[in-house]
Amino acid sequence: MLQDDLNRIRAEATAQLAGASGKKELEELRVRYLGKKGEVTAILKQMGKLSPEERPVVGKLANEVRAAIEEALEARTSALSAAAFEEKLKSEKLDVTLPGRRPVLGHKHPLSLALDELKEIFLGMGFSIAEGPEVEYDYYNFEALNIPKGHPARDEQDTFYVNDKVLLRTQTSPMQVRTMEQQRPPIRVIAPGRCYRSDALDATHSPLFHQIEGLVVDKGITFAHLKGTLETFIKQLYGEDSVIRFRPHHFPFTEPSAEVDVQCFHCHGEGCRLCKGEGWIEILGGGMVHPKVLQNCNIDPEVYSGFAFGIGLERITMRKYNIDDIRLFYENDVRFLGQF
Image (tube, rainbow, N blue to C red; front, side, top):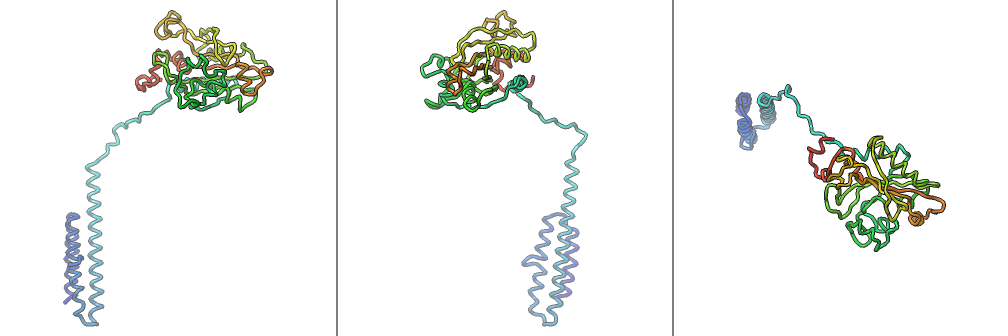
C-alpha cells in the first residue's frame, strides 16, 4: 500500500540524512527523495489510482513525510555547517598574546609647524589672517602695486602666465590691494600662502615657495612701527640673541623700503654655501606703503599711512631648524621629515 511505502521512505530518509557526512551527500539524498523524480514524488503520482476516501489520507501522510524529510535535511545541514565552522576556528587560531603593530602616524610638515608659530606671534600682536587666490590677475599682482607693464621689477618676478591678464602670483602682496579694497583703516593683517616664480632650483631658491604678507594701515603709522614690529617678531621666533640688520632697498609698492637679514646660522657670519659667502640670509623685505598704492585703493595718503612686509617662510624655517637646503622641504624624504 502507498501508506506503507511512505512510512518506509520516511524512516529510510531520516536515517540516511542523520548519517550524511557532507553537503554533496545531502544534496544527493534530497534529490533522491524530494526531487522531481524522487520517491515521494513518485508516490504522489499514484494518487489518481486511489479511491476518493483514500486520497485525503494518503495526501496528508505524504505531506507529513515531505515535511519530516525537509526538517531532517535542514537539521543535518546546520549541524555540518557548525562542525565546519568549529574546525575552521581550530585551524585559524588567533594568538592574542602577540604584540600588535602600531599604525604609522604622520605629523605636521616643518613648514606648517613654523607657519603655525608665526601666526601665533602676529595674532598676539593684534593681526588677523587673510587669504587670497594663488591664480591672480596681473592687475593685483603688478599694476595695482605700482608695477605697470614694462617696469623692470617684473623681470625679477618672472612667473607662469595663464594668459595676458591671469598668472600664478609671484608674491602674497596682492593681498595688500584686495584687503584695502574690502576694508577701511585701521587695517592689521597677515596673508600667508604659496607663490610661484620661474627661479632656478638651488639651496635657497625654488619655483614654488611660501610667503607671508603683512599690512598695517592707520593714521600716524611710521617706519619706526615697521622696525619695531619686525624686531619683535624675529626675536620671539629665534630668541632675544638673534642678530638682524636692516639695509636700504627698493620696492615699487613701498617707499622707503628695506631688506631685513638674519645672521647665517650655519657659519655665524663667516660666509658659506648657504648664505653664498655673505654671512647673512635675507628673510624678508618691507617698507612704508607707497602713496600711489593707497590711492589705487581709494585711501587718502594725506590722512593715512601704513607699512607692508613679505616674509619668506622657507628661509624662516631653515633658520629655525638649522636646515641648509630648501630642496629638502619638497623631496618628501621621510628620513628628513621624521625629525620634526
